[in-house]
Image (cartoon, rainbow, N blue to C red; front, side, top):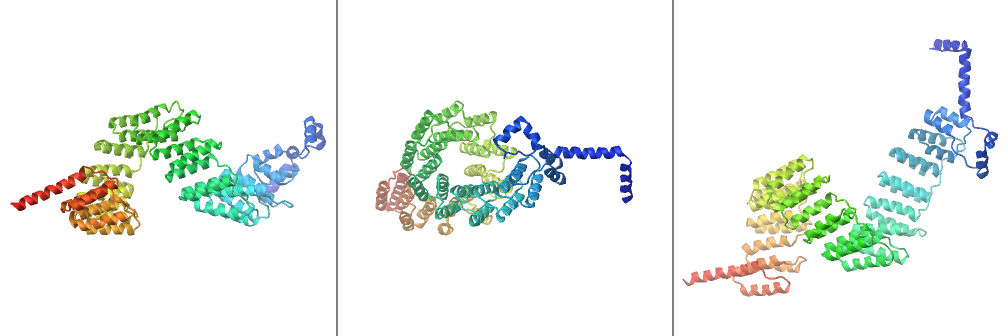
Length: 637
């Protein structure tokens, strides 16, 4: 190797023209790097003008940028800095980090600059690199740089802290954002309202609503940092999602007392809270107040208002507000129109729902899959022919809208309710062919319909298919299968399913408990059913009126009137008040026992509590009277 090197030097030395060429190349490189003299620059008219305007203005030399792009970062680029006489300062570092070069070049240059004598990175250079690393998606290197910045001696301002929190939040590094926030807050800078808002908004995005309140209290205790509109908006929204509605309302009042003006978003959030509480008039008053204060309602405000009025059954009022919104020039979006179509469908106003659908084009709204789902559901609920629902399904596909699993679920449920089980089964097969995951709701509809038709084996096959394809099932599907096993006398299998769902971590809901209790009562196991009712309460599952009526019905038929009346009395003393079914069950029990005076008193009580007598009420009494007459006639013989 040494011999070869020596030989090479000899060869070069014997070629004078080649040596001259190498020297010439070196001179060209130096000339390329050389910064023009001040005299040369000032002789140019443009440069003379710029120099007079601002002598401190200095752009990064284009030749250095070319060197970085060609040679990356290394000895050549370092030499370029020296030859071009570029001083390494904060401005130079920031300018280099702006260049469109590979991220590794920027990282190496940043580290090299940090080791230079008489130079230390400040918050501006750190933030420039952090921004580059964020754009490049180098999360690990970005976090390391943030840590170096915090551990270093450079000052960090509130704006920098806010930006760091936002960047970490975007990278889904919630805990690290909180950690950095408290580190910097403790020793580097005092956060401003904007800084607190950054971390509060991040917490909101991640669903940490409790922590939002904690930060709000810290913010108020700072003494020099006061909540602004953004803070209140986040807090009111957080309290609404936590179900702490009174706290949200108090904050709204506090905000106005502090002279801050609520935004449309805050008004919208509070409207939703009032509707959730059933305070419809209060919501309408707030909407009026919003307009009086000069805060223009947005499409989101109108959506919340129309949705709330629809749930309260005030459909005409909701539609009137929708029409006024259009007159005022507020453009609806597809979500709002879907809500209006939905409330028409639920109110049985199918013609209005279809009319609005046809108007969507003129309103510059394109129907989406939710729109079609809503229309198809409205068709089934209004008892329209099933063929119409099928034609809308075809229309959906023709218009390039992709059906969702919910589309199929609505169709399957609708066809089941109209006794078109075979069509529903075909759609279930189509779902599978299209690659949709098993939909428990669709299976639930089919299993229930097959069970009602006493096709228990077919229902069980579908249930087993769902378990095999899905690995488990929902509590509602289990409840339906348990109910039908109970109805066909297969109580052991019903009990086994009930225990199975608990083992699989699928906690039985009120429907599952009711299904098993109903099966037990049907099998004459009244005491076991009553025990299950108590177990249900102990396990934290709140019984509904049906739970009590199932046990009441069992006792009324086999346990005698006294036990039935005891349960009925307990119901009246509890939070769950008897309904018409409860009264009719007891009336039938008393009548069959010949206790007509007690039955007459109960009928008066029933009427005074707002329950009208129906066919079941009269038939229970007439049936009992007929049986007693038969007994008397037989006895007289």
